[in-house]
Length: 286
Ligand code: NDP
Image (cartoon, rainbow, N blue to C red; front, side, top):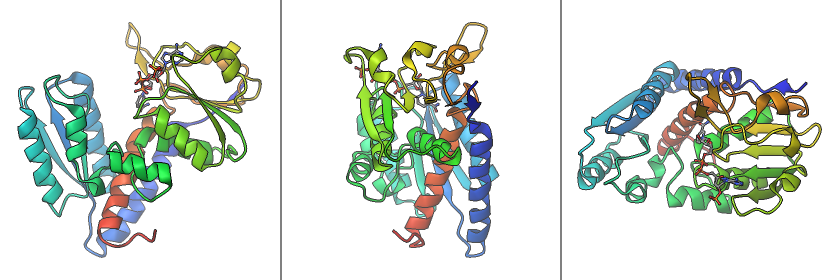
């Protein structure tokens, strides 16, 4: 039976470390500050934003929250971002996605100052990641690296298969595993023999967006399986992209859903905001 990788406990440990660092910073009269913009009233987004504000409080950060109506124009939103870019109190800016359909997400992401891009979605952040320069890394994949490292999973020299090539998860995830010296294969909807490719993996990272699709027949005996997926089934139960009951019988370690990758995303957002604050105050040696 696979050992559980406990994302709840690991994310809590990270938030506690951040809280300690924030307390030390307060002796220098520095307090990290995150600005969160919510546009419209998507119920899931409203919950995510509330959780981000709660995490800020826990970590000792200030937070600025902008709740804009659904009918906000793209220009209005871009103007708000421009104000936050100039606001010296604000270290990180996060625009909760998805945005209402009349607003161009790419334009909004591009408008955030790269030094405040705590989501790591700006082209400058992505470029820095690719060429190995310091900068913000997308929170979910950064969280997966922390889960692996803090569970003592050796990455260097291992065969890693990432299923999914989205800009938010799959692509940055692959680059991060490469940075950790894994041999990385990226799979997507045109991959031939997905099962055979997945079975090569010592570390299988699944971000396919299909409930419980990956069962034990995709997994090598003893592989480490990370499930990035999150779906709400009828009856409100949550599940991932991995068929947990089947895969836990063959994997050596596995993340559950909920309580695996999910809690890591907010913890890494806090980490990015702290990093932004330190960098903006000249306190980061890089
Ligand atoms: P996307 O839908 O953007 O990407 C899915 C990827 O899977 C695509 O690259 C697609 O390929 C590939 N894919 C789809 N079907 C198949 C198939 N049959 N065989 C092989 N590859 C396939 O999803 P995201 O990356 O945004 O998210 C992935 C999952 O992670 C979702 O379940 C999402 O809810 C979850 N998520 C969880 C987060 C968290 O905090 N825990 C944060 C972000 C996402 P192609 O490119 O060819 O279309």
